[in-house]
Length: 376
Image (cartoon, rainbow, N blue to C red; front, side, top):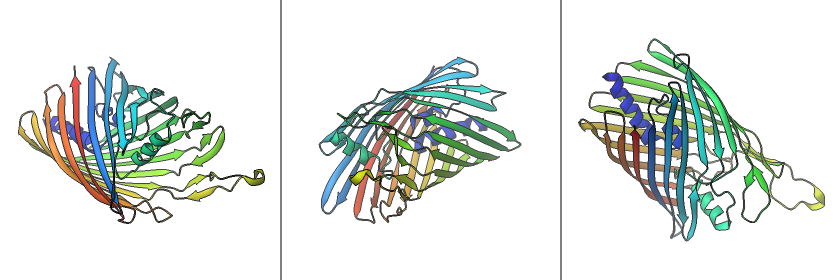
């Protein structure tokens, strides 16, 4: 009974505190029956600066389907419809289709996966769509999507986990091969993002109703290319997350904190080239360090119905040029209805306040999210 309650709380915590769709499908590593997951979110922010207000909003409705092929093998399929607006400018369409196969081996201690991102979303944006995309990229605002499509991507990786008494240790690695695509409308220039290497590691410690978790991720980016020429190399990314999960019969509490450090990036300035001389590469820390803190409290009112209370915060430090800092606080709640088979309906609303750019920009926003998982 305790293990079942703990699983429910962990599932709820990940649904409320994470955003990428494949992160959602990772909740159930081993699938025995088909499942369908749909998440509809509307998020809107008002950015006020010098007595003027700009509204940035996005509606997204990602869906994911998990199909078990045999006892230790399953495939995931995911895509989303997205519509976003900034003032009168809009960005609307479908995202690329993500497909992945996951297999569990050696009594579920070894996981291997391979996937593909099939170009389906619009990649060649016009000037207005590019402006919308840039504002959606603001990390403080937490929008799920800032682009619709890219090139043909391939990814593969694996992980190993083993329990030693009350402690479980896991390590993993993955590699993403990024495909090229046309970045701007009416342009023939091909842009290829750099391939990515991800290395992860972590451990869990169980102590009765308490689960303590530590996770770390290192990401190395290869250079981006424009028509075969290296133009940008994003700095390495290091993420460390600590979580504490308390699971009781009618109460669950999740506390988590994440620290993200981004290294210096390199790029070639886009300037005129007199006499054919290439400018020197610039090196700078474009992204300030980031700290996120989240809390989620779940109370079981009756069997199959939980009330949820949520809080979150994001602190982004200034970068090397002393700009682009931000702090945002969010709070809200909702409810979850779940069945004995694992299907559920989850509805959440949040309100956000904060500021950015040395407190010169005021931020006000809200989000409404509905998630439904059907297990057949």
